[in-house]
Amino acid sequence: MKTKAHLVIPRDILEEVDQIAGKRSLFIAEATREKLQRERFLKSLEETQGAWSDKNHPELKTVRDMERFIKDKRQSYRKRLKRITKHHPISKRNFHLMPLLES
Image (cartoon, rainbow, N blue to C red; front, side, top):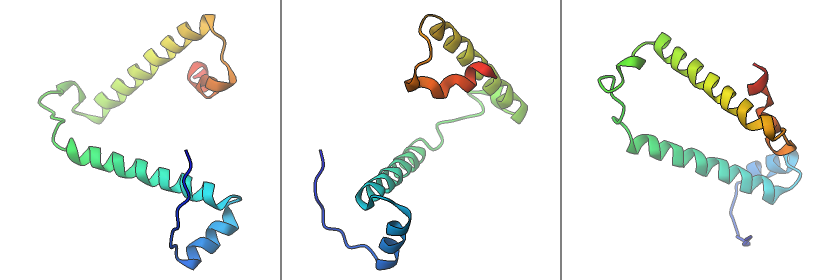
């Protein structure tokens, strides 16, 4: 649902938005969404600070350990994606997943 709001924005910012964006309201709404997402992420980082412990994850102590973990995860995702798409061809909706299948 959309709601009208009266906002006071510095002129220089508004002029730049008008130069860059086609639709002012859409641009501001998207920028606000991105900022909110960033703020939620930062808040969750603060709330979970200290939750990770090398003692609890000795298998991920070094950079090499983490690289191996990430490689294994990506490989398992590729296998799963291939299995899933075997009977359900890639549609436009999930076309962005194609690079996972090709690499």
